[in-house]
Length: 168
Length: 168
DNA sequence: TATTGTTATACTCTATAACTATA
DNA sequence: TATAGTTATAGAGTATAACAATA
Image 1 (cartoon, chains in turn orange, green, purple, brown):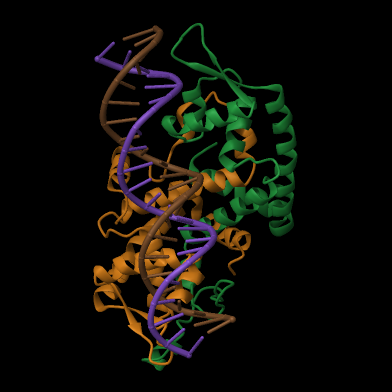
Image 2 (cartoon, protein in one colour):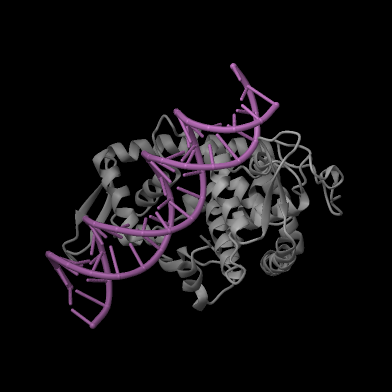
């Protein structure tokens, strides 16, 4: 279903903005991990996604659902397998997500006339309205990251991550 | 494509940077996702962990197991709950991991005399030998990242990720 | 009463094989 | 034969409640 409400609500009393996990035992030596790329990469991803879930609890959108709706909205009429493939989601796993988005009246599948095997994906008016609200919430998270890293830091980070993920 | 070709061919031109989407379908517009932090952060984490798994297949070590062994080795005698907490792993989930590391003769649990509820964690000689080999493999992955981002790029990335994850 | 390790459990994510209907 | 969508399923990963032993 939606996200994990318990998990999102659990962090309601957290003091800071974005995650703060491993500080429990400051006397522990984690230097061998914090110096390599993979460990802070994983921790940062967890922190940002946790923050995302908290901000998007009211809209009931997971990161994957947000990425799907935005991609459908920017690429209307594309095949289901094209959307899934672009997002790195296995085709079988994308079926349940589309079922849910369709059930909530946010997106729809239209059978193509040219190739009746495929489904053309579109946003509904309600889906477009939700995406508009969601983009505004997302902009707030991005602004929070700017507060932490500075505008240049954020931009540098995104560029380095894109090169590392080979998505540009 | 089939129903409304005009809309299907529409391209939302990215105002900011490059919009040339991911590898699978180069014509898909993912610019709304690649410009925000969360999406490339997730994709980069997936790519780095996939590369980690390939490199560590021979040693049969997952990223989580590597982090546990390194942390135990750098903090011998610590309580099981301290190691788990420092790594952001729930205590119940750490039990099975320790069972496996112990079964493979890499780590051991010693009952503390001071507080007989707790287990002090240590590496075995075999565990220390494996960690030494694993650190060398890890250094190779880090060098591959330097090849992609440059030495300065890698260092900058790790620093930004640490600040974002609030670990230090 | 609180804490440590543990068991049991459940829910999400992800990966693969195989089916159907089309091509 | 091959492809798009689907079903079924299995495996990780991660979350919480509750229990026994110990403090």
